Image (cartoon, rainbow over the protein chains, first blue to last red):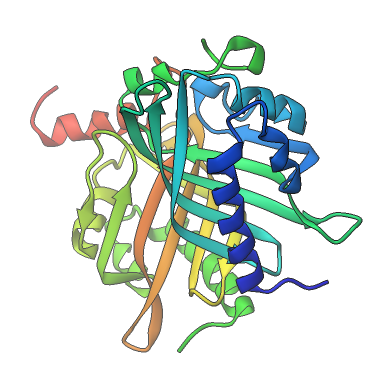
Length: 156
Length: 155
């Protein structure tokens, strides 16, 4: 099956809508199985997440990260999606807004530029194999607040 | 005059090669006119680093740190033929000009929308993200600051 530029943009938009709805709730995070390969790699290019030398490997560990910050949640607004359909790679330009989970107060807004390596699985379903994650470099004290725990490779 | 995927790939390879050869050399910087549009904008998503509007202002930035030279190695290219744009993950080695020592290495992820100018495709904007190193690590601005201090007349 050969996917077109339009197919991949549509799929990516579906991914972000599903992420916003289900990815940060332990009860629903497995809805993301539709998008993430079981052997997903998440490679962060920021030291508070451990840097690129400490990727998260495996979808289940990634889900632990996504659902491991119940006091806040992030919502993505997709500004743009670039697609290389020959290589099956997409890059999204996003604004992420992080809210306090109790009050919905906006805690921080920043831009993200994640790169997604995609593939078709053995049932011809598009999946994310690798996420290479860059985010806007805020002031260090802001980024430090969103550090991930040391057992994920982070600095908290 | 949209470029094909293969033409874009050749254009990008040539751009990085020319940038490394001429992009920080005051005698040859205008060779980069082939790649940067007149209204080029450098758009960094980095706290305390400002936007730069206009190719000539961008050249001033590129030439403002002669003792520390960036060598760019594209490690991954995402070519969006329909949008006439590309995204590059880049390894940068920041090299001391006098000793040729690599002072630091880090990764960038940058997107480059193109625009037609004088019958050629040129880079309209550089939306720029970089790897965030641990607090206290030697940073690119620490190296560039050596020259900026001199230009401000301070030791």
